[in-house]
Image (tube, helix red, strand yellow):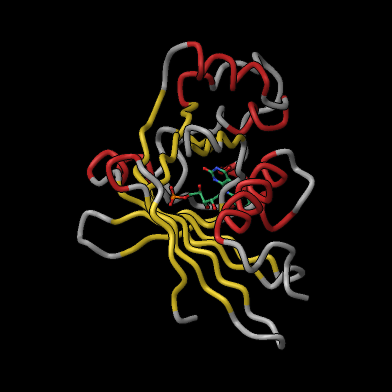
Length: 195
Ligand SMILES: Cc1cc2nc3c(=O)[nH]c(=O)nc-3n(C[C@H](O)[C@H](O)[C@H](O)COP(=O)(O)O)c2cc1C
């Protein structure tokens, strides 16, 4: 069904931020689990699912969490430009976001995010060696049981995805619609596109 305010570019943008915020709040599964794309050292793309942790529509910023030893962190260090994708099959809406990601390992933001993380999430950061390392058997990839739940804090990183472009696509029997939103020099520019 055609989403509410699908005739109005401002309404579409507001709704997109609301959906992302609902995803970060954990109450909309597709919007909670976007795919983050980065660029490998050889120029090839790399994409993976991440959990959307927080959204600041005013600042056009999304927050993600990761292990600082993971490949994506090295990739973002070399090329901060990245993309995020969400498809909500129920709403028949796809969002494609372009942005630049900054990696944060220290400071109040990171400490606060760590403190607010579930114990089950914190424990994952205790795994040795780091994510993506080849291992002889799957059990070698489990974090050690017991011990200090905060032992992985030094590997925890917050990724801040600063949105530079947002593209909205609705595919419906009542007609496809596509719109793009950019912020050149910080000012919103919006337009309809052929779907
Ligand atoms: C449902 C789901 C949620 C995930 N959430 C995260 C996440 O929030 N952060 C993260 O770093 N990896 C997350 N992952 C794992 C990543 O998809 C990926 O496998 C991992 O981060 C290693 O990626 P990299 O080697 O490209 O850095 C999630 C995977 C799934 C299936």
